[in-house]
Length: 238
Ligand code: UDP
View (tube, protein in one colour):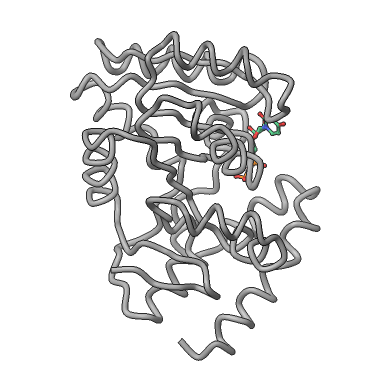
């Protein structure tokens, strides 16, 4: 089932169903985009037609965060909770290890993706994982594409933050010979402990945004859209 939250598609999948779909997309071959949609994505899509079109073209739009799960449930979605990039990466790495899908971690500050790759390699012997900080700027495209191709990448995780990561995957879709590209935002920073994640009880209470605001006050401007998002969802009636 799918919901449309303020006209942005959201797939009603929880973690096991998401992993199953990713496995099938890689097996199917061809290029696939997966987005982890949070309320900031949805509000941005309203004022950025290009970003809205890229999200519409995605093969999967996962519900990243309680704000999107809340809105999707109002339309009858029955997923058990959000599927965030940070929660997805560990079981996805296990899937890639088991199925011999070649994984590539792109983005974040220098050294971060490489540190996460080492950890995943240690946890999943046999997992073929490469890493590169890269950049969303076009000047870096050739170097990054060469590394992704040399690794014969099948699952590419891109951590440039939204909307840069989705636009980057879309811009290069005809040259990226991969199965699946997934935008994962700040997930590498969380998984390497550079940024502390909110405790589980705060996440369950739907207050992760408040925790992030205290931790990274520079997010205040970006987060100003959240009350508007809640108001619009309630006004939409379902
Ligand atoms: N980033 C990057 N290159 C850039 C801009 C950002 O690699 O040009 C990385 C940054 O280091 C961080 C991630 O992108 O790891 C964005 O994290 P953020 O938490 O802002 O993303 P969100 O989850 O909010 O989209």
